[in-house]
Every structure is written in C-alpha cells, then in structure tokens.
Image (cartoon, rainbow, N blue to C red; front, side, top):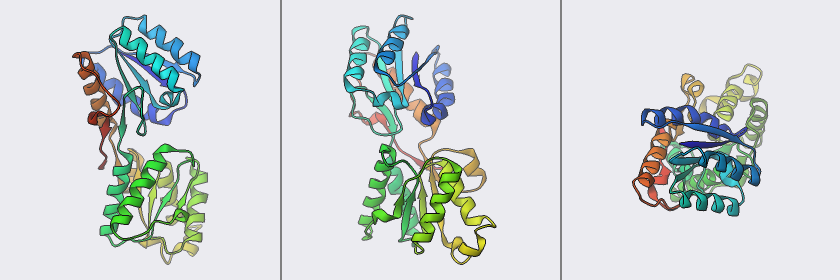
Length: 273
C-alpha cells in the first residue's frame, strides 16, 4: 500500500502510527512518500508509487485540498491500473477521491448535548483557524444542538486562534474577559484545551478568575494522552478506529467494488474518551 503524506500536517502525523500498525497487521507492506503541496509533485510521487506494484494507495490530510483536476487525474490513473484509492481527511471531503473522515459536526453536537444536560447555556468555541473546515463543521454541530434546545448561538462566542499554547492561552483569557457569562468552552484541539485549562487554574490568573473558574466546563476535540491524564473531557474519532475504517474501505475496493465519496463507511463517529 502506498501512503502519500503531506509535510507539516498534524492530522496525518498523529494518525500515521495507528494507520501503519493496522495495515501491517492486515498483511500489507507500506511504501511511504512525503509530498510538498504542489500539484506536479503529488502526481509525480503517485506515479513513483504506482510503479512499485502497489495494490492500493492512500492520500492523507492536506493533500486532499489540492486542485480537484489533479485529484481527478490521480483517481483516473488508479482506476486504469485497478488500484484501490482512498483518502483520509480531518474533515468531510466532496471528492473526487473518497475520503475517510471524522464526523466533526456530530462530535460537536454530542459535546454540546452533554453540556446542555449539565445546565450550561452560554457555550463558547475556542481555537481553530478562520479558514478551517474542521472548525466550520464543529460550529455547525454546536449551533444545531443549541438550536434544538432553544438557545441561539452567538458568533461572538467563537474565537479562532493558532494551535500554540501561548496563542491559545491569550485567546482563552480574551474570551473569558469579554464574555463573563460563559459557563462552558469547546476547545478545537488538545493544545487549546490544555491552554484553557492552564489559564483557568494558573496562579497568575487566580485573582481574576477565582469567582467563576470552577464553574467553567471544558471539553476538547482530538485524541490526546496528555488531556486524558489531566482528566479533561475529550471527544474524538479514535486514530485506531479511523485506521480500521481505512482498511475496510481498501478491502472493499480490492474485492472489486467501487467506493464513492458519499459512501456511509467514510464517516467515522466520535466517542467520549
């Protein structure tokens, strides 16, 4: 199986160990190829893998954001050689390469429902870049869940920030300062979750937040051992579950079947960890 991986993609890097283990346990040999985000290089590296007598190819992470014409050309080459082709993405991808992905909207809906049951009404979303499709899908799930409970979501309760501890800490402080009624925060990724947790508990902020820090519930997205050790609520599509679904989709194609972008097998639900 050939794996096309982008450089500097946190999603692909985190998934790779579970993916490699799952495929190797199923008896496949792996050929890894790291690719720059450039159309000609993607097709060139794919051609190199196709020349190695592979039976399947995986396109991971941000490589699926390439030009649709490039991805269509890749799909056509795979079809011509009867090669199984599957993508793995952090968010829903319309094609032309069918991609396994977490159900981000449902995860946010589940997390919001859990907070609503705890009587939280002012729920904020912290983190993610403005252009992030993962963030957009989760905000959609949050808004839908609140709407079903008769609560309107205010865009002002959503604050993007870079996935660094320093940026997330500053953003958490800004969010709490501007919206003192917030009682719960959904955190876009493990870094943001841990930064928000630290902001609420740190001694340097204790004099500001002491009155309400205990009442603010945090829930994070993304599998992370450090978050679990801190006993922070986390919801995620597990890496091993994503890897197993990728294997299922590959086997489906290797058995002679077609995998289309709308196939329900591509969507992986999240669970509380």
